[in-house]
Image 1: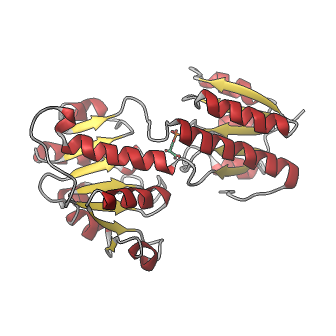
Image 2 (image 1 turned 90 degrees about the vertical axis):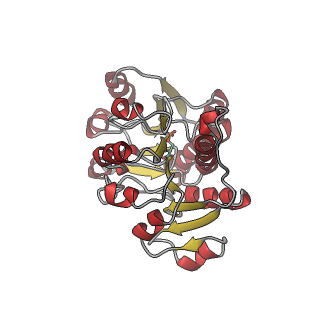
Image 3 (image 1 turned 180 degrees about the vertical axis):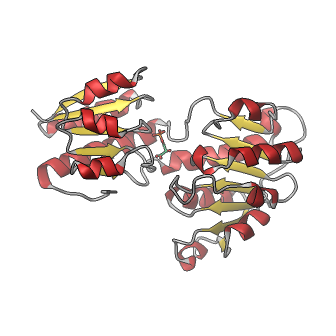
Length: 305
Ligand code: 3PG
């Protein structure tokens, strides 16, 4: 029987798992679950005889692919697929997919929440400031960036964006000002919300040069990936500028060093941007449906390799 494994270090909400099970079993397949595993060897063992795999940020390395002798498809229930070794998948003819847009609203709401948290002095009674009238730069105008822009406009923020891959007129019709470079964006943003993926080109690209150009009292909001930040240069900037704030959903590798700047550095204990019932249901069920559609009908929509 065709087996589908859901392997999640950070499990989906139970309601999402039930929905995934229903789709998989209605399709005539068998569901297996590996949740909150503590050792990667449990993952190697669980993938041994499965045909399909659903993961979140779980690392699908070439070792996982090697262990998964029967694997035909892996779906990252979410947007970023930097956790999947696409070359290893392609070499074995394994289709890799993501589920774009399905958890975007949850992440966008967290980005707004982060801004309010920093503006209101980490929910302490100290005098804070308001988002209304402040400039928000959106770095990359994909599914999440666009939703953050819509919500920020409703809060009275002035929204700017930079995304060389999205036509300017598409961004402008949302009431967002398009700027011509990352340099221009950072230099003119009181808040900067990051939505770039982690790729060869973007890793460590958010550096001292960009960040130090931000205005006084600026705040960087990262609900994207830690890998895009040049952490040593971030450290240098935090040392130099006591007005600069950094809030992130993905603790830095140098978290302990940055913690000395708390509360103007804040990291969630575990990445939680997409951790809502709604996002789990949307992304989990989409992943299950994509697997059934692929195995039964050969549909490869959202293939990324
Ligand atoms: C994504 O790329 O979809 C988000 O970063 C969410 O990741 P998660 O599924 O690990 O919460």
